[in-house]
Image (cartoon, rainbow, N blue to C red; front, side, top):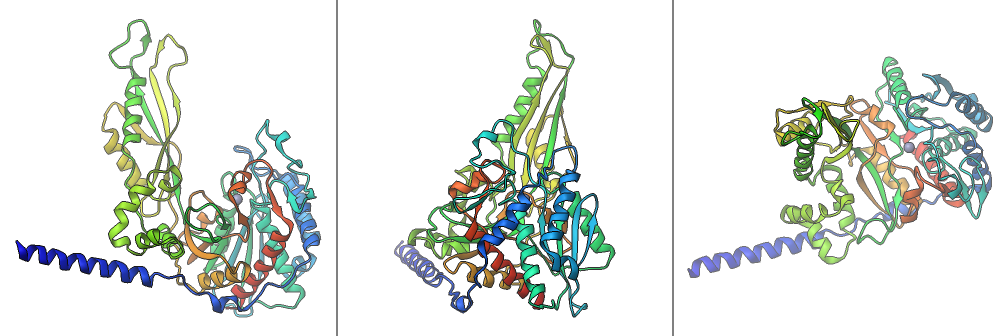
Length: 486
Ligand SMILES: [Zn+2]
């Protein structure tokens, strides 16, 4: 007995030592070397004017009607007018109905190219919310230190800041070593056909992109619990999505003589099972990478947990599963969204149908999710089928590549106080078209997002700070220059 107690004591001591050593070593990474440079000053008001001009074209993507061609073409002409040197120095072409591809050929064409992505379309303003806008959504007003309008965060800011960067570099005589493509989609908010057409074209031309940079993440502040400093999140992966249709057929008839269970009852049971049996949580890849970087800056108790994931992983998973927001970063989510029975209150349904939407985490596939649905529903009366072609999750990009290092270093110049961390993008971006094609894909826009800004993206009063935008342009200039020279 005494031997067992002694052995346990030794084990416990060893555990305490391991946890302590790991926690002590788990210190913030010094980015001092990266802070040597500073961003050049920009002409804030001129840059704001340029962005505001682009916001005035209502390039709205509607669900079933493709890009809005007239405003899209007007925007093309505006960009050509606003960036004359870029238009003169770079090859440019319209791809598909209205996407744009610029090619800035490098001095060493044996090097793999870089693709700077963004999209020119915007989501519509939801009917009934127009009056909530302090400045109308397509006014491009500049007021109170902000540029106001749909697209100021998502994603004309990406298009315009990239073009400003290239225009400045062309003006100062910069020659890229590596070929740089600027790829601007026309329908990211609906199908992403534009980005797909650009990828098909680049493939046909034999290009093998080293890296694609797109929107999808930003510098966030006051959003992640226990992290006081701004966090510059680089999206190294994004979730996929799929919708499954559940169908139950029955004899129908009058509701006055119902069977023990109607088609609706059977369907409801299947949905209930799916909600009660979520897909398993996993804490790995992009999310583990994020927690590891952010954890270094957290208070001691959280730091101990993050430094010792080998021990605390199950506990962390349980804690993070409690909130919908953090749970979504751990697992493929299950969301029953649509349901349909009979068309009349006194008619038994001959068919009841539901759509369940899944957001697939990297590491799983549409096939594994479908397998899970079949196993959980476990009812031959329920027909299970894909409602539309699924979009698999993206591969997870490297956090040790030269391009990631360039991005992290340039972010440290933009925002010296920020913690740079990889992250998982919950929504979908055009960059999914580069899965398995570009060696790495990074999703990052040099914009600052606070708690109040989250609702502005796709919502009311979308706006960007005039000075913030100018710093974003300076960052993009640095990034394009560095990526094209490495
Ligand atoms: Zn977007």
